[in-house]
Amino acid sequence: MRIYTTKQRRQIDAYTIENENIDSNSLMERAAIECSKWLIARFNFSKEFKIFCGSGNNGGDGLAMARQLSALDRKVIIYIIQGTSQFSVDSTQNLNLLKKQNIVSIQYIDSEDDFPIIKPSDVIVDCLFGSGLSRSLEGSCSQLIQYLNTKPSARISIDIPSGLFGEKNVISETSVIFKADATLTFQFPFLSFFLADNAPYVGNWFVLPIGLHTKIIEESSSPFYYIERSDIHVKKRLKYSHKGTYGHALLIAGSEGMMGAAVLSAQSCLRTGVGLITAHIPKNGTSVLQIAVPECIVSMDCSESSFSKIENTDKYSAAAIGPGLGKHATTVDALEQFLKICKIPLVLDADALNIISEKKTWLPLLPENSILTPHPKEFDRLTEDSSNSFDRLQKQIEFSKIYKVYIVLKGAHTSISCPDGHCFFNSTGNPGMATGGSGDVLTGIILSLLAQGYTPKESAITGVYIHGLAGDLAAQDLSEESMIAGDIVNYISKAFIKLHNNYNAKN
Image 1 (cartoon, rainbow, N blue to C red):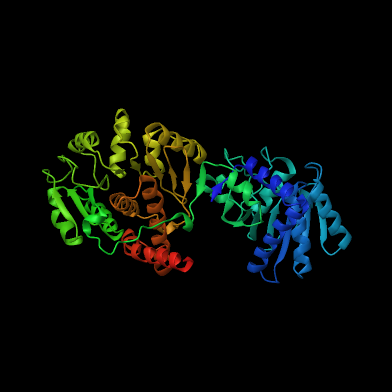
Image 2: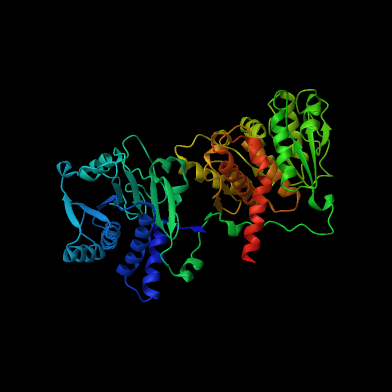
């Protein structure tokens, strides 16, 4: 699914109105119907919907919803904030219709004295300001949102939380933004929904279809994408294949006290379908790895406790370096030499990235199309501190373009930036995966796919999706709190089963 800018979304709306022979009010009615259906499915008749409306089309959505909900015998009160701007044509039409029917209480807010009493059982629906907002909130609007944010009631935003922008947001202590438990948006998510800074305001978000014109959607380009199941294509295993068919992966990992990282990466690499894996590890980790992962070939480093040298990579299909590697002086030198000789697809993670962040003159040594898998702090060390998530995203995309590499920036919606400037956001995963070793598992998954012949782009996107899906399946059985990285490894097989079942159901 493409992610469009606020401006593009307006253009798509306008094209739909012009080419489907409908008026803007009819499109508003479609949006309101989808929101009403969502609310009815989740809140019973005991709830009272308190819908707060501004004068723009976001307020028009709320007025149309009030009419629809009341027609289904739901309790609704409309609150209209005064003095923001002139009412839009569609909002005026819906307001007049409500007044004519006289079945919904309409109250006006001029100042703080008019703020209503909110009960815990109420459902607050934010229709104050949509994506057309172009400035920070102030005055009575700001005071109202601060008031509503203090209430323990369920809080729902329509289109986008009031005060939040669709793309760049510079949030400070003085920022006033509605804090939604859930946001109902139309046809596509906003880019701002994927950025960590905005999570306290967006809550869980849901994309509601409103029948926008498919032609303009297909023709409108965007560098941003949301990864869905339909984007994931797992290669079919061949009947007359053998272990050599599925590649030979090289994993350079582990150091004294950190051999668990090598174990997790090797296990996940095997579980993702690689034919062979060789782990190049310090001598004193040999027994650990051969006991924990007997299927793994061990290449012993000449050092007892750290990575110090590897001769060549000619016999391998792909390589990964970094999990549990440490930053010993000999390891730093060995990494530089490895970057110079490595001619196969490469994944860099953890301490490999931490070393490079201290040796930025090495950045040109990164082989083209390598995959880097930092978490936000590791990425900031590679570049410089970012002022906010949007700033970091821009730096991520620019870094990929400059060094011709793929950046897998780990997080709630892991973002994958590509050398061509495109950026993909993942749809799988959960907070239970915020546990030590989870990143090592991801490195092994991506390494496995690279070794099997997936392109770097396919390996990054598919690897991140499978990693998150395995985590989701583990959380269903074990809970987010109890999940550990080894559980993600154990559920990779169930992730593949789910992917195959979904494919078979469609074919």
